[in-house]
Each structure stands twice: as structure tokens, then as C-alpha cells.
Length: 161
Image (cartoon, one colour):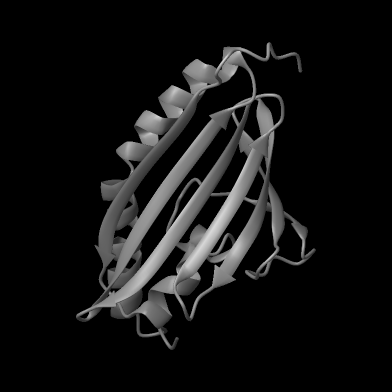
């Protein structure tokens, strides 16, 4: 990867917020890479560590991003304090930091999500901008998917969490 020292690479930051319609102890675990599969239909991480998929601090997994594979690392998984963070790298393309903050709100949970993306070369700038635009618009989709899952789960006679 060659970079000219006087060229500023693209860096973006986008954030969104929503309210999940369940208490924080129910919502927080759904933001782990393994449990996210329950509510996000296209989410398909392949766990590298731990070998058996299990949400925990330090988990490492891969995920397809188009023709490339991103390596994800969980850098914070503190469900009691409502803090979850991931960093992922698409080699020779970009680095992304996703920070999630949760807080109780009446009978639900306020979820704040921030995406920071940095291009690793000048050619990746357009992709970073494109993904940042998707990040900015992702709040309603996350809210609909999580709350849809929670509503369905609460209607199930098998629900015992």
C-alpha cells in the first residue's frame, strides 16, 4: 500500500440513535456478533475466536464485504454499563470503528451508534463516503429489525429469556 504523505485520506463519522422496546438487560446481548444473527437477516459472521461462536470481549470474526473479507475485533463488550465497540479492517481499503452506547429509557433502551471510517488509500475514499452515507441512514433499519425481533420473541410461547 503506497501513500503520498501530503494527501489527506478520507475519514467520516456518522451517528444515529433509536429506542429498542425492551429493557437494557434484554437488548444489550443482541448487539453481540453472535446474537445479532437473531435480528439481522444478512448478518453472517464466521468466528475465529472463540472457535465456538460466543459473544464476549475480544471476540474475532470475519465477514464478507463484497469481494473482500473484513476482520472484526470486539474491543469492548460491557453489557452492564451499556458499552459495545467493534473495530474492523478491510485490508488495503478501510478501517472502521463502531461504538454503541446503551442506556435505560422508561421501559425501553436508548441505543446510540457511531461509525468512524478511515480510508487506507486515496482510491478507497469514494467507498468510505458511500458506506458513511449508508451508516447515516441505518438507524430506522436497526430500529425496525431489533424491535420486530423483540415483538416476535415476546409473542412466542417458547420465550423464556
